Amino acid sequence: MSNIQLVKQYFEALNQATRTRDFNRVLAMFTDDATFYFMGSPKRGKEAIGKFFENFPVGRIKASNLSIERGVVTADIEQQVSDTQRPVKATLTFVIEEDKIKYLSIEPQGKESAF
Image (cartoon, rainbow, N blue to C red; front, side, top):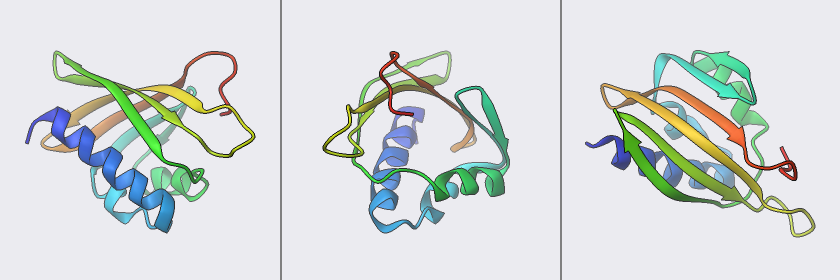
């Protein structure tokens, strides 16, 4: 499977999980020792990443501008978490190792981000 395909599957699984609140399929896509950075705060390992997802907001995620350079995949996302807030926008950076996510960084776009 290509790295781009894996990232597309990640977004499909994440969208399903935001509805069902079952993030097991998403967590299965990470290596056991994965590092997940959210706004500069690292979470290491599946257990810590799982705790992050416990509070993940409900709302469909639209991914765009997927690109790959030297094996690193980047994607822009937009997520509408409520009708009254502006959409959350961020850039995600993925490092894939043996068809699993080894590293994921989420950085908000713009000052208006609702993160």
